Image (cartoon, rainbow, N blue to C red; front, side, top):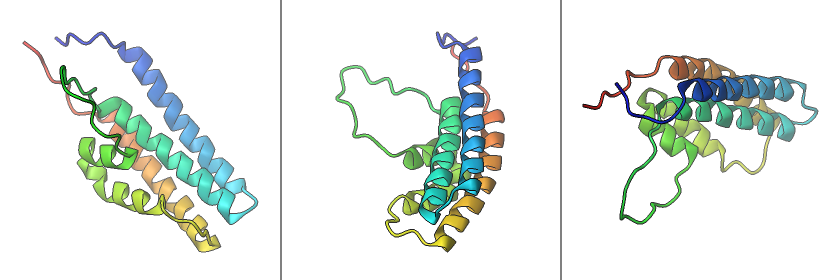
Length: 134
């Protein structure tokens, strides 16, 4: 039995909301008027999908007496908690530094995010078994 004070129903609702927002972001990307808008909407959708996975798998850091560690990107965290999505993390981390967006960049981002959303949905639903505390 877990001694967590977190309410799983609330966590599950937030995960569903993040995944729904990611899907809506993809739709916005499809309808975007410019390559830069399409890229930005798709990238935000990918971030929301990653956040859904993190919400189901990441455990809060509990380090009493230690200074906080440096902030890490969602992509670094995702690779840590969902190693099967590590290549995706690397792809999206590299895309974060893209400054000049071409039509091809935007189309690739949209396509990749569509695939990633499907994988993120599965990763968020197929959580590893909760660790039992004795």
